Amino acid sequence: MHIIEALGRIFLSTIFLIEGFRKLFFREQTIEFMEAYGVPAILFIPSVIVEILFPLLIIVGYKTKVASLVMILFILTVTIIFHTDLSNEMQLIAFLKNIAIAGGFLIIFARSTGKYSIDYKIN
Image 1 (tube, rainbow, N blue to C red):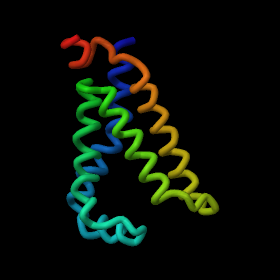
Image 2 (cartoon, helix red, strand yellow):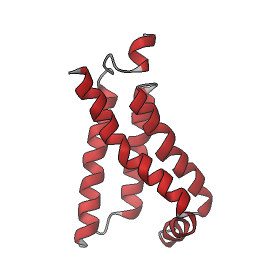
Image 3 (cartoon, rainbow, N blue to C red):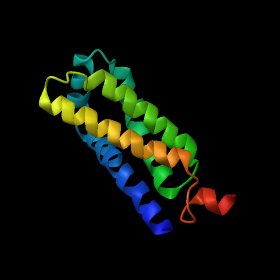
Image 4 (cartoon, rainbow, N blue to C red):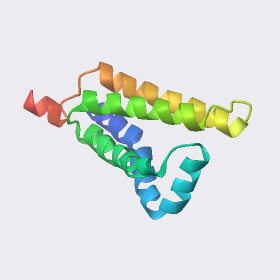
């Protein structure tokens, strides 16, 4: 079962790694999108760092509780800012997807990591 838990951490984190790196290649479009919702461009780099660093920590299982809590807060913040027009079907789907992903990170936060993690090895 430990391998299943490790795969779950990888699956949950992959979307953020891909999006974090994608943002680096589409910097201007991402900043324009953020600014259209009132999010200042200065938050571009911190958002990329969050989307790359903390999922990597979750994948390797290091500081997993802190990393999953950061991801929960990030996802809920992004959801509230960008996906609250629930009359738009695509926004509703994005809202529900984000809530489901936050739920996955909540489970990681609530549980100890399995033996396939750095946290397990150092404790």
